[in-house]
Amino acid sequence: MTMPTVLVLAALLALGLLNQIAGPTLVVAWGAVAVLVAYIVVLFFRDLVSLFLAVPFFAVLLPVVLSNLYIEHGGYISEQGVHGEPTGSTLRIVGYCIVFFATIQFVVSQVAARIPRASVDVDRFALWAKLVHGAVLLGSLGVLVIFGSPFLEGIDRFDYWSQLPGLLDRIPFLIALCCAATAVAIALRDKLDWVLLALLAVSVIILVLFAEKFTGLYTALVYSVGVAYTARIRFVNPSIKLGPLLIGGSLAAVALAALATVGFMVFHGYNTSNVLQKLLDRALGLQGHVWYGVDRLLQTQGPSGDLTHLLPGREGDWGGVTLLMYEISPTAFVDRMVANGLRFTMGGPGLISYVFGYGAGAVVFAVAGLMAGAVLGYLLFAIARLRTISLLVGLYGVRLMINVFMLGDVTDLWKPLSFAFWGWVAIDLLLVRLGRSRRDSALATA
Image 1 (cartoon, helix red, strand yellow):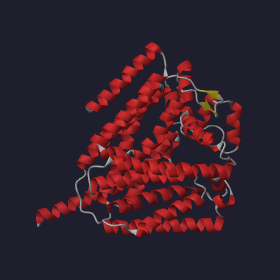
Image 2 (tube, rainbow, N blue to C red):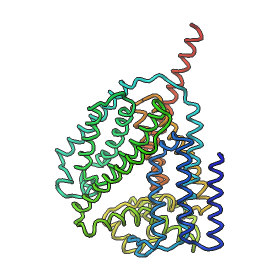
Image 3 (cartoon, rainbow, N blue to C red):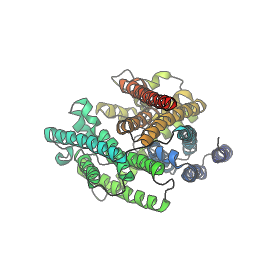
């Protein structure tokens, strides 16, 4: 364990003692957020590779942390019908985040030190990125031609995909993965490649036509930033200038917020007088409400110890998070959401803690960090060798870890795609090792 990690954990322990002595206060909540920000700053100056590889995980967990801060300030939780109050929930979710990210950083740093330098062909990688990305966009255009555009028809994306064959609803995520591969190619080329830039532009247009008012575009941005900066650090410049990064991030945030605003006005009938409140409710009142509700429940009742909460429920394909919602939200509200076919997410930390308790939950998050670190290690391997398909597979693995440990879809661990992912990784690494052994043998006998 590195000294910065020890100091961060010591700061969290001090805040925990203050929380016990003086009770939960906003000072404790803000202090926890400050500790997490300090940890990210330390990573920026000490381990850029681990930081940028883990960007998708930060993008999922940071909104949960900020949401809990907002709720502890008295923010309204529409899904629970209550206003929040200081409970210490922000401190405890930050503790989980530090355990998770510190474990990831340890694993990735160990893997990075063991990946040998290899000769790469940037032009060949860019060509494959163009071919794969172009093929996916052509297929997406075919779907739009055959089934129409939900954006142009004013249909919500959930209603749209529910009417199409099941596999097609993965198209927005597949586009996001292709954008990430294309972003790597752009980051490594010596000059601008207008075909690559056009692919990104067309991807944005198609995602908008698919009524992705935020999620698909945000996923494409987050994954692209993570792998593109990692590739640039690996091959071009091991340092990153903070100023341009902050400026670019701010501009991207403004653009995404603008698109989300337009989306809410087009699909849900909001206007300029109330759309801002809807955005705040979505961004700050919703993302962390499951953790806040479960944490409040644990403070009064303790963990359930019921492993069935992790598994699909008795009604169709209800997952553990749906069952959990009945514990923290009005029954009539949950019944209505279930009847409308809506899926509850962002419940991973709460689900784990509700079943196992705080202490065991921290252990689970350490295990989650080990698994996520291993996935990111494979992703780094794919970047270091500029293997297009391996890069896409590695990014799928990141999504798998997010689904299981962040969103609460635990059963994804033993679905066919999960086994296919781990099988691909094992075979891919084995083939590379065998190839290296043959080259070494040939050199030894030459």
